[in-house]
Image: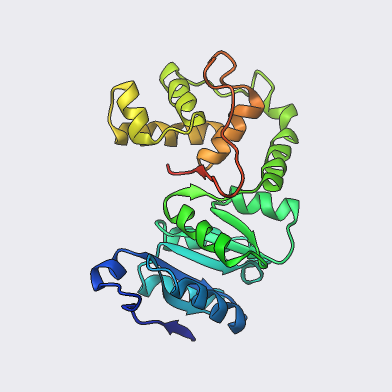
Length: 255
């Protein structure tokens, strides 16, 4: 089993304390040249450190057990044809965020990756600057999604319109749930929502889990897309738009 453990970086004037609080990254890629290249890119950043490298999916799972990790940059080919790879990843490292690098963007594959909980889908040819920005944004709890992927995800919901827009199958949401959803579509964080509604952040998280179950979505991004397409908030005058933006300004996706 080949897991490449890397020492904590203390160069670039970093203290051990600074390194300890940096973004911990695992590089999972079958090609050494990509791992070496990404490691060199991240080595120039004071707030990002590569804690391990893995050549296979099995090695990645082993590394996740050994190293506390914030972000995993994963070669898409490693999970090709493995339906349960991402659910396994989520079970083994629920706090870690997953970025998948793909050689070619395909609509069905991209939509499914976001559905299963991937926080970012990026091309193998992504520039170093954008990759660094992507890692930082996703480590902060946001979702990295470009305009093309947004269109694909919306189209996927439209394909389900016949069954989901049937009044008999429409989920029933309480006034408080609708109020929380309205805040989500405005880009508000859980702490801000709790303050506005007059409750605690944990209560907001509990409500969101119930809303996710009712609507069959997995995160804030899917919730916003669902509400946009099905006009869940058509009577909420302040919730007219979902804040979709370019990769430089990803949508927040914390629970």
